[in-house]
Image 1 (cartoon, rainbow, N blue to C red):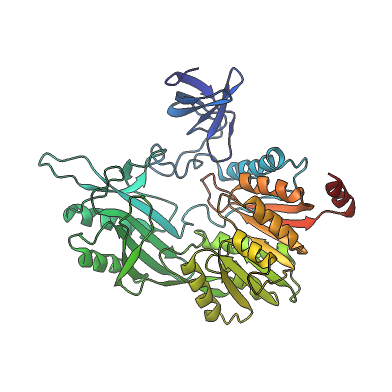
Image 2: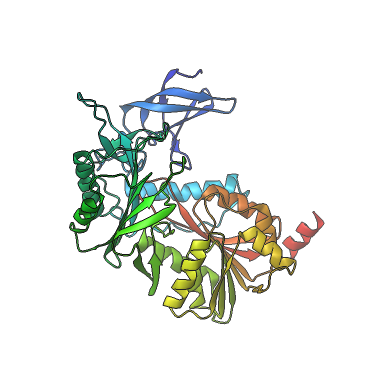
Length: 472
């Protein structure tokens, strides 16, 4: 098997992360598209001693389980790669992937995985989406029109023009279509991520269904966009739910939808989200779970896993803008959030004041450093927690964070994970320190995509397990 070979493959499974899995002469081949039972044709793009990777080129024989795709962009877009699999099959697949990750990566012979929690809605659930600008094909008069849409599957510099998308609200798509027409009419120059020229970079739309409010941010390399104020007024006129429109400037070479500075064109740049009875102020750069309805189920699961009686002290690591911290503060004696992003900490403190959470406080710093400083007595205010809540990014926990958390000897640890692979790795590290997962509950936060969230409750192992670990 060599790079550029064209293979006919029978897809056996979908791997964690969404790639189709097939085998040729015992070697695993990962394909960027395909469902169990499909026969596909694919071109090899990479090989090594253990596996090969291939790019889908044709569906030769569809799986009997396949259903018609809802979206016209399914051939090009890498987002909803599972939409041709019935939703019940998606749920079974994701639950099995969590179980297998815990078994093969985490070393758990019988992982305590509970039934996956399905999303309340399989479509229209995303409250935020980012769309990219890219230069289009030059016209006969030499003009290069802007294209606004989503990235083609597996690429960073190719964008297709969005016609429809069924993950966000209809208003989100309407704003994109309006901006496409306006940008073409006013000859906006789209930014090129390789050449680093052009102006318009991203369009971000956040539409919160709970509070029926919408924020739109145009990210650009400069303010040199003809008709910018007219565009903003046009967007606001699309719906009374559009509360704010902003221009975010990003002059860096990294092609990421993050504003170094921001100017409000309409409104003040903020929205308010309501989750489980609390209110949270949201700005463009702030993290917020993108499926509000399922986020409430996830947070309820985390609260249930903590089993609070009202007198506990809770430590929330990687707290962001304080969503979980404030929900735990409402059910505990004290909650302390730790976060490394200064703006998030400032927003968390504002959210605490907004909700009257006098028993919540926040510490600025990277989790590993804060825990080390508390352990050494170099930072005041160590909470001596009864419960530790962990909600790290996809990369999971540093081994020293695992060790420091174990040293705190809480009664329980609640681990909220967005990556089953790093969750499994971290549970193995906790296991070596005398902690075991009592239950793992997967949540389908993003239907039709390969992403999975989990809430895990960890407990200290019994005396016999602790003796074994001590003697190891």
